[in-house]
Image (cartoon, rainbow over all chains, first blue to last red; front, side, top):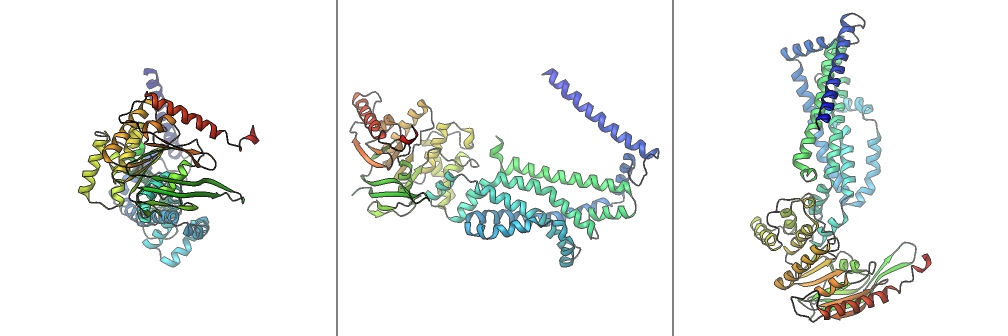
Length: 257
Length: 260
């Protein structure tokens, strides 16, 4: 026991030292002029840039816009994905007819449609919403559908002998039975959806973290680029943590016993 | 008039290759109100098919089923089913599982509370209301399954080998609880099992099905008083007799010869 703990402490401190060494190396390489400042930012410069952006209130407004665009598209995708997913299972002929079309549209590389979306919906909220939807909907939809299809046949028999209606079967059986698979879909799309927003903002926008990234590239502000990259990473990890929280405490409480 | 009347039930499954499998052949049986029918048979004799037909889950190929003289054509509120593996919903607590049937029938909150409380008490589940199924033992789970069916107060209870997965002692305890329940609530029971001793201990009649296709081979009346003793000599003699008959009809199987 004691030995195991000592090993873990040893591992953690080793990892910390390694991390500090990498950062130190980057700091030295940039400050000593071994690497051009345009290519790599010294960690200290990144920290100073981060501080300045906070003080000058540059970061926060852009982050809010990105988060808003993300949630607007994501909420629609979750609602539509889960609902359609179970409807496809409840009505097999719908499933048979439409699934090939859904698969085909899912196969389109989403980034390729960004220019078209801008022509259709402009460079504001709507085009970002639609892109987030396209990035996330299909995964949520197929995860829900495939999860609901795995519903234990005996559960369906129970519902039938109790005389459950179709909508009761959908809401009381199919959705709860599909929940583990739905949660997996949400976890995957929490990060891919954010990727979608950033992509769209880099391509065409007047605000948001992607815009900030694009702008700092144009100005050769490498430390700022690093700040934005770090913020985006933290944001996506935060979304995943939020899904995990919902899983543990709300939707799949029963699985975590 | 019989409570449940099965009239010349045949069930044939098409198996896609043109040859059909006959699962049930001419099942004809009248069951009186308050009877406890044990349906006994080796695996593959169509016991579960018969149960699914009576409960309205499957449609028979030919023949009719009457409940109180009225033909049964689908799931009926008056027929409740307890499944083999209890089939509790893992995402619902004990209380919410028992509540399921009442929820489907859109009963009021007050009704739900009163009825669920009653059956939690009756099935000795007090203190376990907020547990999830996987936190319960097999015996406990089957008690919840029973309560979930009982809460809708069906007149006829169908049970598909409900104790099959339980250990010997838990099984005996639950057998007694089922008998108590049947006597107190005056239900008509159809209990499917492949355990001869269980069939004899529980039933007022034992219906023996022969395999492939499932036909009624013999019907045994058991007139013994309750409570019964498992070691009663008359009972033991009957068990032996049925066991012998079961061995005879099982050896009729020709489909295994090709592989031996």
